[in-house]
Structures are given as C-alpha cells and as structure tokens.
Length: 301
Image (cartoon, rainbow, N blue to C red; front, side, top):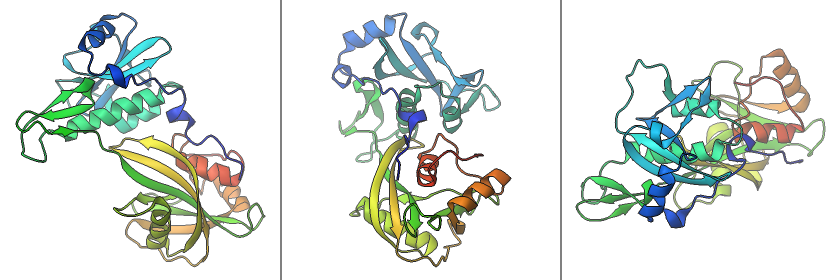
C-alpha cells in the first residue's frame, strides 16, 4: 500500500506549544501585548468565519474572556480567547466548531484543533468531579483547578480507531475494501468503520471488535496507518488497515444501516456516477480509502 499523507489539512505546520511558558505570567502578558500576536475568539462553542475562513484577530480586538496560549509559529504567538459572552442564537456569523474545520486556511489546522479542543473542554467542565467545587483556569488555560479542594483537571483525549478493512490478494483487481453507511446517513454515503477503544483493550483488538460488532466480519492482521486529532469534542482518531478473515456481512442495524465490499473498479465507477459518496478530504477516512484505492477519487460529502 502506497501511503498518502493522511491528515494534511489538519496537521501540517505544527506549532511550538511553549508548554514551559504557561506559568510565566510576565511572558504571557508581553506576548499578549505584542501587535503581531493573533487570537481565535471562541464564544460558547462557536467561532466567527470571515469570507468562509476562520477569523484571527489581534489581542486589542478580542473581547473579555479566558486567554489560552496555543504557542508560536512563523515568528508570532497564537492564543485562543474563550469569550465571556456567547453570541445570540440567531447570529449567523458564528458557526459551530465542527463547521469551523471547513473554513481552515492551509496550515492553520493544528492551531485551530488545539483551540477547539480546549474550548470544548472548558465549556463542558465546570465543576470538580471530586467535590463539586467550581473550577478556574490555570497554566494558560491548560489546567482547571478546583477552588475548594485544589484538585487539578487536565484536558482529556478519547482514543478512537478508524479502519479500512480489505480482503483478497493485496493489489489485485479482485481485492475489495469494506465500507459502511451510518444509520442516519442518506443512501449512497459510505465511509470507513470506526469506534472508541474500551478500557483494558489494545487498539488492534478494538479494530477487530468494532468491525465484527458492526458488520459481522472477522479481522486478522491489523497494521497502524496514521493518526489525526479530532477534538469534537475530544477524540484522537487512530487509523489502521485490517485484513479480513471472513467476508459474510451482517450489519448491527443500530449504528450501521448497510455495509458493502467494493473493488477498486466498483468504487471508481460508483463515485463517478454519484451513487457512492465518500468522506471529504479533511478526514483521515478519505486518506485511508484513497491510499487503499491508489489515487484520487471524485466526489465527497
């Protein structure tokens, strides 16, 4: 399998996160005052797009809120600003965090995902799970500390496996890959299978379990492909390539409404006809599919 770049849109040009400066209030204040510094304002769980692109502002243009250090890139310091006030529900300039991924400028992916992940965490984590006390931000927004018991909370990341499963002779015309259609998706929309890793489970076993639970297909060998941050709200997508040891399909009819095997020829023909709609390029799923296919495919969600 010729590996394609699996997560270019979201992980190219990573920034220096400057973890050692998160407790240096003097340095943080100096960087915030610098006119070259940029900030992404997040209000509630929404961000503002300008001409379809994620909008970065100067600190002087930012509203009151929680200042979160993202880090440094290209000689500038970047922050997220979690606003104290949320926009009105009917304010169409502000969009969901998921929609923001579609408005990324090339190379902004790591910064925006960093900001989104922390904003989602701040929004959902208000009280201490130990004593119920109120939490307040520390370490430039990367820690939430309880005002009652002092217990510190840290951002969580939930590992999820996402996989393409193939059977037949690798690279042959008869080789097929397995794709599924979610129960809420329209006809023709298919993607790779995915699921969360359970406690005490290896990622490879999670691949085998999820594929069997959703489609009834048994998987043998499982090889790592690549990973992609997906903070919606807190996932890390870990991509794999699995080899099927059985081919009969029996969908669970809960999460998966349909699952099918596709040869490369069938995939190309149906994608060109529009009867097969594949995930967009922002997702690692697209890269898994096109890597198995061996080239670009038309159409996307």
